[in-house]
Length: 168
Image 1: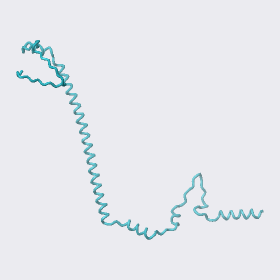
Image 2: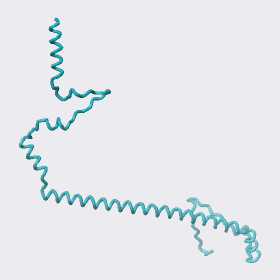
Image 3: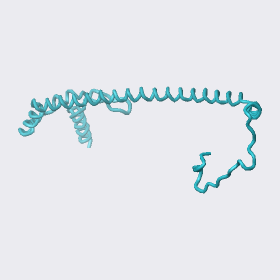
Image 4: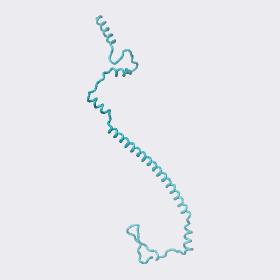
């Protein structure tokens, strides 16, 4: 039994000394993460697979561009550039027009405010009693009498047309 134990230890020691695939026995891993080995070495040691001849032909065709395809790509690039430049120009025009509209709206608001102030000033300066005195006293106007007032019935709404043969 002692011999078996010694052989077992010897075999385990020899297994630990054999080179292992993908890892080096000289490094100790600290912490809970494993360090990556040099990928470049593994890449260089990996066998190079030769592609199938048809795959190789297709790849060669894809690498070479014909003159027609290059012309098509150039035309597509020019069209895209033209559309992009026009789009940017339209965006600029739209921004300018938006600013102009905002300026005009503010100008309109200022004019409305000025107009309302002037209207209120004029209305407050009118003396209705003075107008009545001038109309009756200087111009000879008077109040309407009983026979001079004619009332109309309008059945259709707010529009009325007066038609008389006398011309009054």
